[in-house]
Length: 290
Image (cartoon, rainbow, N blue to C red):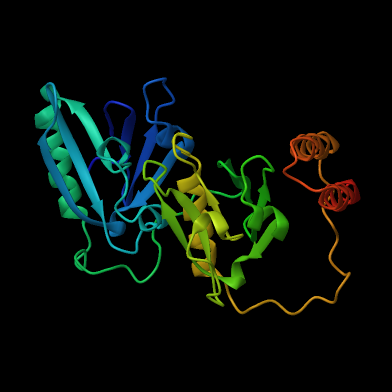
């Protein structure tokens, strides 16, 4: 790019052009899509782009759109084409009066595209959102610390199969991929694909998946979470050595969090959804985490 440091500001985002990349800064306004607010900002190398277009938008706007190369961005790989147009982070909406300026940047970006732009990237070129990542789904809370992903079930939302299996933790070396189904879909969920492939077909029965739930609303943190896990899986080296039993320190959880879970368990017990034995066993497991 010939005008390093120039900024093109549009609705909900501004693009700052550098010599080898564009820095996309998303606004945090009340009307900004919540996915953009969760992302904050993203630096996209020009080598990660496949095409750039400029087209008329709605209600007196123009849209500058950059198309990432296949395999270049873990966020878009995880989304797998499911993002709505308004939530596309590569789409910059501008007032129509800036069309001439937008045309200039379109041409500049096109000139900066790599010679092999039409080919899939052999590695992720855009950095994934930083860990830790976390979000709450309908049936559980998901946490990723950069090395392992954990699911903690909500007793009032998780299926019997999940809460009987107990909370789950998966090291990235044990995973082969991530399956994200948009919260806007009927069966929205996030599933960690295990290398052994031994998983139930239904996400609500799979201890390696959390479901978003019909009517639960968009889980805007779930896509950055999926991208972060996907990038970690891709960069994971040889499987770690086997750790002897008892050698791993147990993380102590917040006592208030444990108390909240025991209260939910008690409500299930009073409602007759949990037997006396199941209540005693689960309560003991929770108290042991203190």
